[in-house]
Image 1: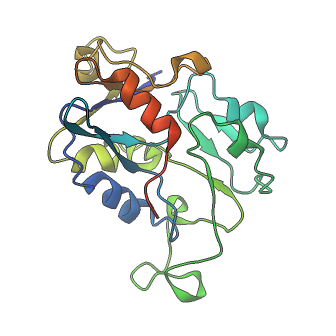
Image 2: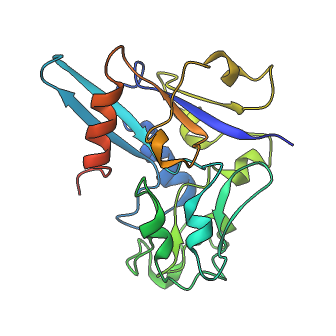
Length: 216
């Protein structure tokens, strides 16, 4: 059984937001909900601006799973963490439990009337987002199940994200064994890790943890 993850190379990300838009178009998340984010970190002392792709870490030991009283959040055998929308009652304990603050509650606001996209009269499961339910990046499980890579990875023009099987020695992700997680001390063992510019890891981590959301 594979164990999927992503390496995000901060050295290569140019902040173009293509991954953000690709995620939005692929999953049709509601207004104000951004499963995939690009955070801008400016270090004036180092005289550089860095861009950090930020989303659900699909942790090996996800605290959100344990926190949900309805057992609505679960982990697949391949390590992908998902929300069962039928079981979710919107309690929000998962939001509080996530140390990365990447779980969001779906709002009532929608792009189209009558819950129906003009170009999609039978929306697929991954595009249906009932209000009041928890949601976060799904690693595009529906694409992975078809043998495809996540939409954000495929669309990145600077190849700043590397997707693969963390247990497959032949997977491209194995070439990036120097990547590191954010907030390793939280003990969640994220399967999304990062390659940082030399000497910038601590600065980036502190900046991201202080403000883990894109400007509204």
